[in-house]
Length: 321
Image (cartoon, rainbow, N blue to C red; front, side, top):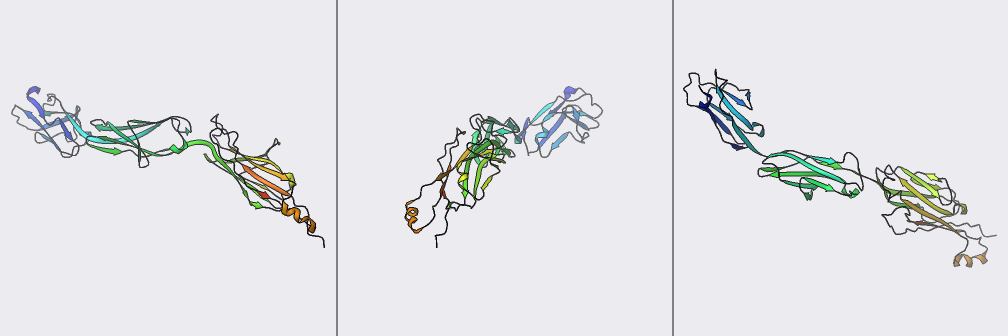
């Protein structure tokens, strides 16, 4: 038998999920009509089939390849190869991030979507959460911001369907921002009582280092998110500020550690009502004003309005009997 007398009849292309029949045909009369089938040059696991047909009941993308056949006893005389193509929707959809792994605010990030499909995937859609944000195989985020943090997925599509990737998480690191100071208690406070200043800020990773300074001094007056002034007196008058810092506080030259100032000012003047009470023998009243001012002098990208809070300290003695 000449190998030219054997050939495979089969569809050239089939869609995944359908069935396909491959037939080994010969013009010779075989005494033992047993055939051996080959895929990509290797015998199939079901290598002896009692008839001349190979049945692919449910075609998958893995069935694509080059098929040939031979009669038993004449394995060296194989038919010419027949190429079977399988059409299938996208699969193995994945997203890669560059650069990786750490992403810092202000840098550029590119997401790339990869997938396998036949015909090749031509439609790519990007989502942040459930919102569509872009089209195309790649999605670039130049000058990435903290607001760009979130879960991203890519949807790939061709003529036979579409599939979505698993979500990738973008976690943008950034230095402290939105620094604010609160005072407790607010309002009028008697001399000898306590005042607590609290520094709050937003940062990623979260701010863990808070340092308090008093203007004119070279050393910190306190550390930690809270600074308590116990048994307050006029000596505490001055300009205080809080420095919030994390691992990325100095990475961007235009945004250093955010600073928020608290101004404690001393006043010896008395309001009218206090002067009116002088004739009754009441002692002088010492007035202190705590002003919280959001100057943020070292930050160039945030211009907050000044915040003010007033605290008045009363120093009084009992009227003479």
